Image 1: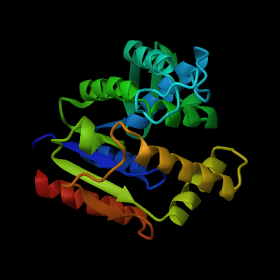
Image 2 (image 1 turned 180 degrees about the vertical axis):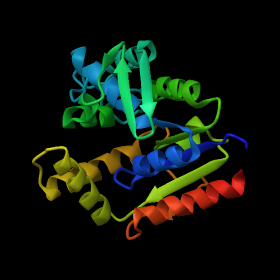
Image 3 (image 1 turned 90 degrees about the horizontal axis):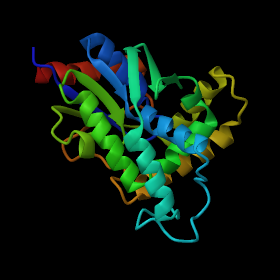
Image 4 (image 1 turned 90 degrees about the vertical axis):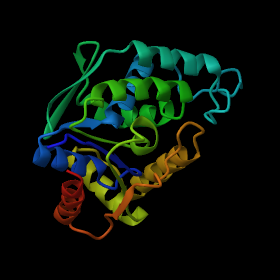
Length: 240
C-alpha cells in the first residue's frame, strides 16, 4: 500500500501526540513530534546563555512580533541549523538526542516548554526546523504532529487532520498530564499557560496556527479517545 504522509495540527492540549502515537502504531509508520525539535532548540538556547525573555536593545526582530532583536533570533537560528537532532525509538516511546546527548526527559520540563514557545515565534528558527522536519519525513510513511505541518511543512500531505477542543477540556487534560509527571501545579496555572501559548501560536508572523483549507476537523472535547483514533483510521483507510 502507498505509504502516506499524515499531518496532525492543532493547539496545545487537544491530543495531537496521543493520536499521532496511536496512528503510527496501527499503521507501522514513523512518528515525529515536531514540538520535540522546538523544545530541544529551546534547551540549546538556554544552555548557550541566550536570554529569550529580554528584548535586545528594544529592537523588534524584523516583524516577528517577539520583541526580541535580530541578534537573538539569528543566534537561536544558528543553533537550530547546526544542531544534530535525532529521534529514535518506537511510536510508544521516542527518545530525543541533541548533538549526541539525550534530552528526552529534559524537554518535557516547564523551562523547556516555555523556551520552545518563545523560539517558535522566530521566523528564522521556524525555517530551520521546517528543513529538518522535511528531511525526517520526506520519504512518506510518517505521522507528524505540530502547528503548521499541513500548512507549511507538508502542504501536499495526503491526509491532514486538525484537532481542536474547548479550553476547559484542554486545560483538564494538560493538568492531569502534568500531575502524572509529578509537577505540583494548579489548574488555573495550566489554563493561563495554554491561553498564553494559544496567543503566541495564533499571533506570530511566521506560519501562525490556522486550519488548512483541506484539513479534516476533529473536535476532541467530549469524545473518548479510542473513538478519535477510530475516526482517524477510517479517514486513512479511505486514502490508501
